[in-house]
Length: 147
Image (cartoon, rainbow, N blue to C red; front, top):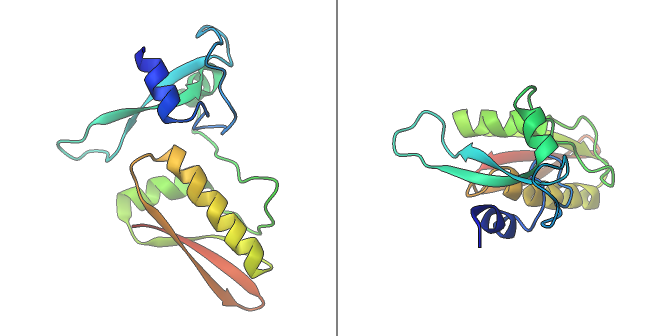
């Protein structure tokens, strides 16, 4: 098994950037082919080890030119969604917690919270995130923190 196969298997053959499936049989020279993207778990700290995440070749190449945008699912009913990538970077650097979205119902907030935690498991492998849902003003606020 090659290193790319191991990374793909670990990430369930899903691109960490666009969250779409990656074809394990596609050519690595194809835009939709698999590539491994290095990831440093804790920037600037001694003893950190770079790990790898699976990405489409085109997504990985584009990330080198512009900051990645991790989109919220269109299936979720959320208001004022925070930019996921920047929020995660900030939480990893500074800690604390941040409000990431508002939802009209508790069920919508629970669905968005579950989706976000699943999505973050691919964005920042090895980091444990937690969400908190609080009611107020007829809406439900989702807050994200690093556990």
